[in-house]
Length: 449
Image (cartoon, rainbow, N blue to C red; front, side, top):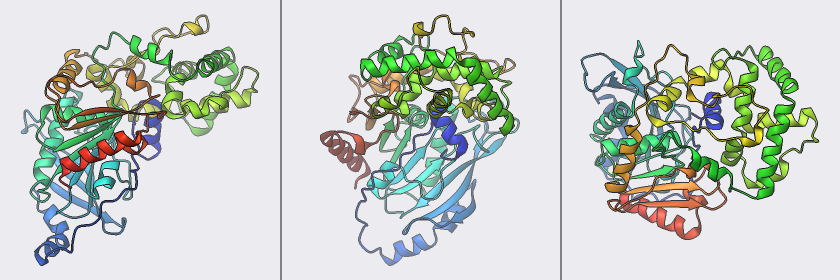
């Protein structure tokens, strides 16, 4: 789960962008800079432009004490064969000071946030921030876009080259961070280049080591929250499908008015069924226990029911325009990351499209999906046997916690922390006070603050 319209769509449907707004805790600024430091800061744009392959696209106003640059950095299409062409990867830089820590943030998708978005680690450390757009998302794509080069190794190499380039200016500590898919991307980068940064904060990142077995999610959804809330969610799913013809007609009318189509998924009816199947997962990720009282009963009017289902599932994100924009993500799900399918025995007799939960629903048949089962197992082993200086932060009610990252005998200076009552949009600030203090202390220690 950027922060624009399409980024919000990803957030609500595809476990996408985490909007880490930061806790608002600022580290006191350093003492007055020396004359040499002041000259370096005044010349920061020229120094950035002097990095081979780096281009300053523009500069925008930002918060006091911060200069905000829109940049591109030229990356090889294929890091194994740099002679085979290149593309420009988009990124943004919030420059605070070359003497402050640098935070590398990614949503895992496009570059959607503006000058005032600060990740929580950047806020806590009063640091600089690089926000990267991932390859094949937004405008950061080779032309032609050969999907054979869209994998976790190539994306990790993008980050590695970028960090090496920027360390010529930012020679202090580096912290990497991201949420959901951005958190996953952060872990994958650490696995292949463990020494690029001094520490990582990983929010709400699933760890799907066996794509054939999704029972952990079924078990999680069967115990999260109260029995009454779970029953209400199942009842509203059934009612939505009982009234699917009426609901579908409203959905189709909205699509017609907005000029939206459903060719990839196949029809409005298929899109609606898929949205209803995903409803409990999305509810616990983004609404949570405080919204249980708002779940409509079967006696609700059709207006009420449709509006609530739309509010939870965001029906707009099942359209062709949204699915096409996030096609690189679906490709990754179908080749390396894995995808979940939840069991729905309470909907027996109401479903029309067996297999609609498969990732293939989002990817046209002419795009091959060859799954690599070893990719995530390798990541999991590395975390347990070699992962160090990593904080994993989860929300107690977030379904991705069904398959979390776990530490092992080789993990060093690492923690898995769970924020009570929280969902997918979790933060260090949402942790219990003791855990939040320990997490913040670890982050500052890694950053040398």
